[in-house]
Image (cartoon, rainbow over all chains, first blue to last red; front, top):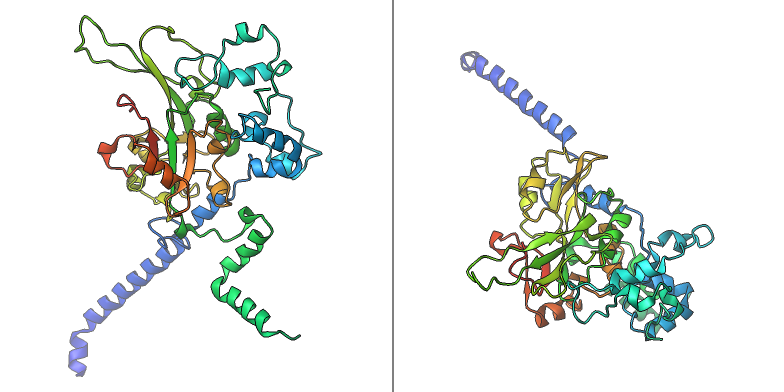
Length: 152
Length: 260
């Protein structure tokens, strides 16, 4: 038995060296691979939470209706009913958070209306379009139309 | 404290039915604010987008909203979404065999709208095509990433891990739809996240929120009550470059063969 061990001594040394190598690999791997990597696939699970962290810019129309119920009621009857408030008024999550500090900017009416209603042959035929200069003769659209219920 | 049998059964019943996160979320639903409920379960969603070309009026509000919501650099070539205008000239009466090559333009990504540049009675046809990440189920961009910095989440959204991206640009080249770019401020890749910070809170994406004609609609294919199922059933839809078998999930209604 003793003789056998003596003969295999070089093998034991090799085995220890190999085990140490494997151990070193496992330690380095554990240090380098981030927690959660591989849980759902070849990526770090925490990356999904990172992507969720962004603050909101647009609050969504439901948030607007909470305070501006009157406008929303008029709006719901008109042909613009499906359009989100922030489509014209801009991103206003900051206004929802603090309505004193952040006030919505005044809108440049003609430029804004013509974004959707200026004549353009690429637009679908159903879209109401006008030659802005001829139609308004330089007046603001809101002098005749109510933007919240434009048929009026 | 004493409970009669009715209260006891009602309380235990509720907790048996709604365990853990669901019970927490229920408190928010009862207050009428379901969107604030914590515990978004990524395994119960499969997000897709329905894009109706026949409704797009080319106003560019979506492009603007995306830039504002996601702090995308202002230059047109850094765009997570953009709108293209296609113009297909009329057939040539002398040589009808001639291939009709479409002319595509997208000034500032369509952010400020499209000035009319084509003759009104030229006989050609023109239309708008909103473009964005297709959130492919078999994404070429994910397959080439050498460090696992981009991935298809369990909810079908293709996201980027900004902490792991090494900016090697393989994915930018791999995307057949041109939906990725390198953010010059961080030198990491950037792309549409399908407004992941919004949809996980129960809101829709910024582009869908502002679209005045509902030409874009976010849909959850794992939710049987989502209106997208009705839309997909009642429209003849197509995805971009179906020959590449990317499993694209941006479903286009009214897609012309000229669109690439």
